[in-house]
Image (cartoon, rainbow, N blue to C red; front, side, top):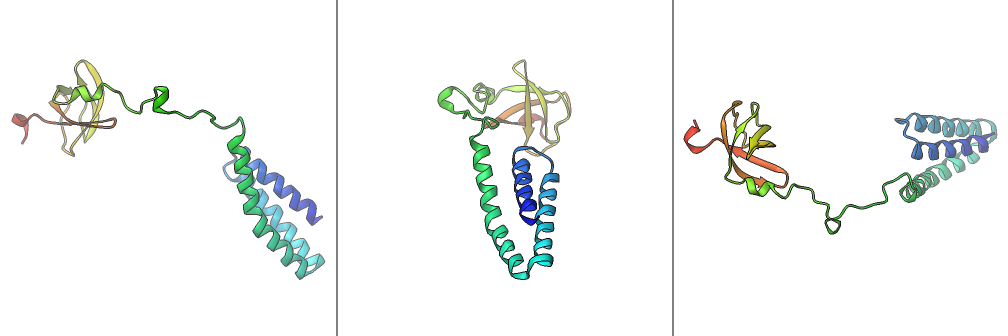
Length: 157
């Protein structure tokens, strides 16, 4: 009986690796392993229980690691990598063109929100200052996908 419970626990651990259950299958596996250890400790002997406990504590992490390795090579995972050599870029290449351009805040910027710059809707962030909707803004810096804006010098308080 304890061996069957241990094997069922292993099967449930593999199911947990491949089927997202929010930890429910993990709890079931924990219960199966715990009950099998209880049966061994109470019905067989404490020596056999200690030996099975040691095997579980050493073997289960390796089993989980091996299951994750199998999952990484399975068709269920993303097998394509995205790289710049294949033309994938993380930022729009034309954002740099917005530096020193003026625009209009389409919503209150506290400190982020949408703006209209060069007739394009752009998500922008201020330098921490609150900017009212409809205010004229100027792009002061572009870092990655982040467009940093400020009030023009004449409008600063």
